[in-house]
Structure formats: structure tokens, C-alpha cells
Image (tube, rainbow, N blue to C red; front, side, top):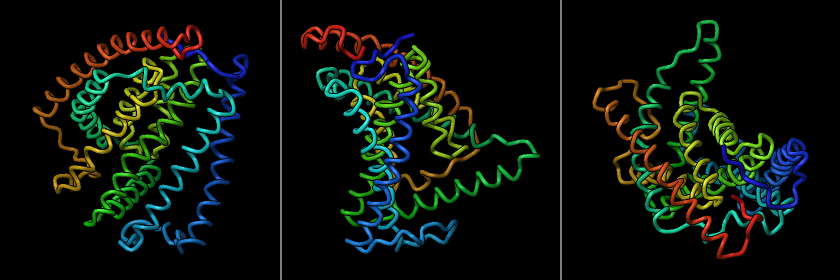
Length: 322
């Protein structure tokens, strides 16, 4: 399997130590920044997030602004800022090579767009299969808790996504598509995948472990499988290219297309999952899955060509990511 060499100043003899440090920076540093942002929001704008802990119908439209602020604060505090600090402190300017546009081209972007479009039937079917899963009877209490959490998540999404104004639509696209694509890819691929690659000495294994964590940390059991598939796609895009923009673009498209459908009035059931699986739907998903694998294989080949060309032209040699 492929491995992502460490280009910076991380102690390669102790990747476990580096992983622990990274997690501490994300959790401790993120919590500190989050508290500061909350206090700043309350002091400067009078935003109150204290009443946003209810479930079910307790969330009212008047809470939308506070919920949006809370989501933005979380993305900045626990994802974007800690990731940039980690990359800067431990890898220096070499670490920011993952953002180099010289390692991507138009063909890659077009293939990523096609890839995400044909992935929807696959993730849709996997989501329906996931929703049909039942926990053992002795875990009924846990299953009820899981469903309550997912109902709460759906209610929160309904609150923040309901807007008829241009500014509201713009903010919705920002917090549902743009920010998650950047923030989650920074943490899961830009930091953790590279860290696990050093730890396991295997980029492929790191992709699978990171995809599992990526899906699990969304805390939505009945959406675990489709998110895990997406995590694999985002991870391999980054592994093969050494460039975060490809996985960010794929993540953004996956989130933005359903949001655009919702805003156009064609995606009212975006957060709902049906459990009725039809034969045409299954056939379509199987065909799309085969096409998805084919595009991924082709992407791997042309991406390596682009990366090798960029390394040769820039004179990076062995200091490149791949």
C-alpha cells in the first residue's frame, strides 16, 4: 500500500506521540478558542446559545441565527484553527504543500465532479440499508437514544436550512457545504490521515481508519455507512494527489448539491431516509458503484502523472508528499 512520507519536522520515530499531541491541540486548543468565540459573539452581537440544547420541536425558527453561529464557531475552533496550527508548528512551510494548485488540473476536477454525481445512488442505497439495521433487543435503550439524537440533528438541520432571503441562502451554503468541506478535510485528511500514515506505515490503512473515525464522529449511526464510503473517497483522493483541494472539492460537491436541491424546492426530504428499497434503485446503485470504482482507478493513474510532473518541475524530489 502507499504511504505519505513526512515532509516536515515531525518526529518520525514517534508518530504515536505526534498523534497524541495533535489530538490535545484539537481538543484543548479548540475548546479554548470555542469559549472565546462564544463569549465574543454574546458580547458583540448579543447571540445567546444557551437555549439550543432542547430536542424535538423545542427548536424554533428564531434560533436559526444562533445555531448558525454555533456551527461556524465549532468549525473554526475544533477544525480549521487547530489544523492550521498543527501544520504550521510541526511541518512548517513544507506542510502547506498540500494546498499546492500545481498538483491538480482541470481533468481531475471534472472527474471529481462526475465521481460525486454517480456516488449519490451508492450512498443513497447504503443509507437505506443502514437505516434498516436493528440493534439486539438488549440494546433497545441505546437504539432509542441513537434515534433521538438523529431526530434532534434533523430538527437542527430543518431550522438552519429554512430561509427565503438571499443572505440566509448564502449562509446556509456556507455552513452546510463550504465550511464542512474545508474544516473536516483539514482535520481528517490534512492532519489525521497523514498522522496515521506515519503510525501504520501504510497510506491505504490510514485512509480506512480515518474514514471510520470521520463517519463515527458525526454521531449518526443510521448514516454511518454512506459517510464511511464518502470518507474512503475523500481519503484516497488526498492519498493519491497529496493535495487537499481535491478532497475539499469532492466534499463540497457532496454537500452542496443536496443543499441546492433543497433550496430549489426539490430536496424537502434531504434529511429523511426511506427504508423501501426497489429493484431499479438497487440496479442503478450497482452500476454506479462499478462506474465509481472505474473512475477512482483512472483518477489514481492521471493524478500520479500530475503529481510526478509537478514534483519534477518544482525540483521537490524526495521532499514531495508522495
